[in-house]
Length: 260
Image 1 (cartoon, rainbow, N blue to C red):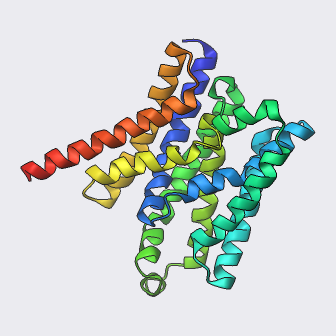
Image 2 (cartoon, rainbow, N blue to C red; image 1 turned 120 degrees about the vertical axis):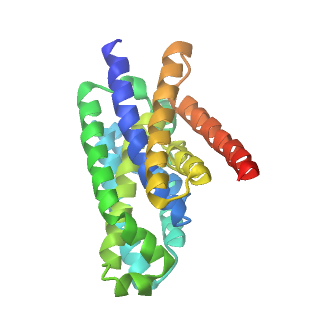
Image 3 (cartoon, rainbow, N blue to C red; image 1 turned 120 degrees about the horizontal axis):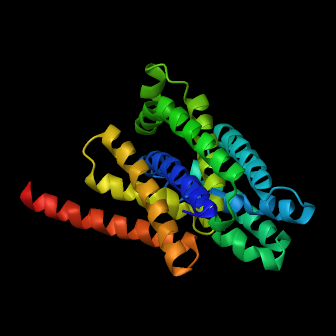
């Protein structure tokens, strides 16, 4: 296996696993589209990285962190719904990002370029994705409980504000990693599709999170593999594999329901 393909698969599978795992929380909280919205918040950071000749990933990550901090503060201080606050960030960042991103680089920013992953990118993807899953696991029950009832979470000694901030931070991290794999335009699908598929065939919360992570990793590997054979960009293929997985889960749920 050629080194660039090995690096791409390594980065893709870990990014897919982390995205799928965090996606299970986002779907459970009925915030499935937040990942898609946050991905566009990263666009101005990518543009600045290109214009000022530094790693666009760092620019994307910085803008995502700033958006998470602002979102957390506005949600706690104004009591506006979280999706409404993120929506405000989305429209502003998308407009600024499109205006700043040089035209030749816009396509890569929107659809990603997993083929250009180097060994350092792959190592960062492995390390960061592993930390995301470990931290996500530590706050998983608190996030779910706070979604069911904030009062119940407080009575169970869950620090709701802190848990919400960590949750948003981890979402921002997986979005930043996913942008390299599928681009800003498609990264929401890397989060949503595995979780939606897992929800169709899961009967417990722990199985749901594990299956979502597995579906994310499999979608990434299959999409990158198909891209290496067909020459088609990996990002759209990863999304198509994820969509096929979701449709398969719908079919499996119907078959399972008939035999239940």
